[in-house]
Image 1 (cartoon, one colour):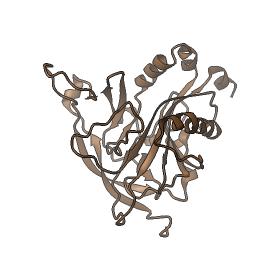
Image 2 (cartoon, rainbow, N blue to C red):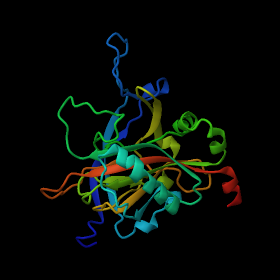
Image 3 (cartoon, rainbow, N blue to C red):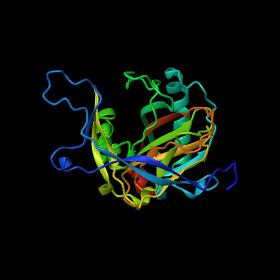
Image 4 (cartoon, rainbow, N blue to C red):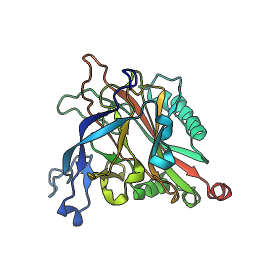
Length: 296
């Protein structure tokens, strides 16, 4: 590839969860609230990670070869014509409806879209002791350096029943997907790009469900254990119009990939003065009604 398209591949180290015998009797967990000082157990997590070097293949110029059903992710060129990302009201009243329109245009058989989370991230740094408000999506998070999937299957079921209780039985009769729409905010990504694993080559047995205990809700994600079979990809200098559709869950049994593990990695040979990565991710429950699925 030429300089504009970037290298064919790069190598970098990422973190995988490492199996522990402890997990045979105690589920992996991570606590995001203060633990009472008189509690017998003062652990905030029981997770053990290991560093592994991976090769990340650049798919610039080959984006259309990857599909949600076949690989668990795909890219589309799209301009949302929106820049006011640090204003929560504007994001929720203007940007999210644009994302819903985008999802319905780019994904097949979508009857209902329900947004349950969105976050901003940047690749800067925080002073020790800085507190992040997990309830404020405009409070910047750092890139995630652990290979994972955002939603465990049971968590998708629980979230649907909790947040869409009146419709849940009907919605769960059809196809249920969790889709993340991820894009840079302004500058093309040079450092800490988001990498995607080909989900057609990953089994649930390669993952460990991990409880996330928060003040108002306990959910669960899936942390990936290391496997030699994984195939990792990224888009060199992903721009704000290079929009990623990333699948976290799919109830369909006839697709090649029901999800795609993902992770951010520190790029080698980043130029001096490169701007920090700034990105937004929007997570949506995407439903196909049972009658629509039967008619298709």
